[in-house]
Image (cartoon, rainbow, N blue to C red; front, side):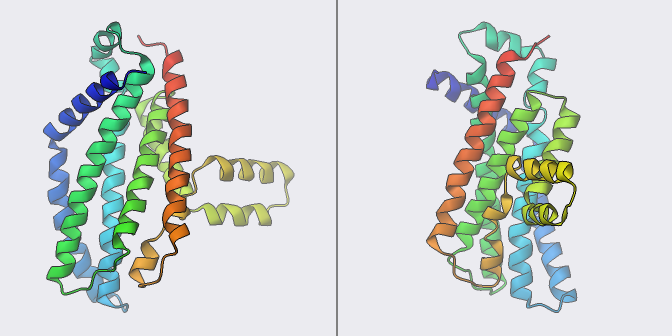
Length: 257
């Protein structure tokens, strides 16, 4: 594995994305943040500060998810369609280095967008006169980790299937991962052994995104234990390593035509 080649692919990928119109996503985020918080804070019976904090963190996650999906599902197929991948792989560049470079490039783009949206959100809170919880950075870190896990899942799926199927399956992974406790309850309620086994397999395969849900603690100004801060980081590393390994192995065997 050559880190220099991986870094080169990551840098090229990052520059390509930044030069595209995806930067407009930040402007859309700002407009959406202001409109959504103003509307929901007026029609909800909850405290406006809690509504604004909840929506603000939620929109960072939603826009991060959209960015990962919008770019990630075509990250590999675009190179194949343009036939530029033949030029890349004809050089001393291994297939797993190509995958890792694409992964790092998209992760860095997501990090830049995440930090910019987070700064916009913090400034908005100050402008609205709302106190900022010291744990809000933890909640944002966990949101970013979820996005990085999703990027690794997208790359694994895109190495195996078409962009459309990759997009649908990735959304499915995300939705099911955010409903892990519901799946666990289905296991307890199910009497059919085959269905029970299937649900258990799904529960253990799909990343449990509920580990990363520290947003509620921030909204309700609750203490976050140090284990709840660092355990999701460990889970993220394991999930990312697993799906990147699947992505690299799948792309090594992929017949590129």
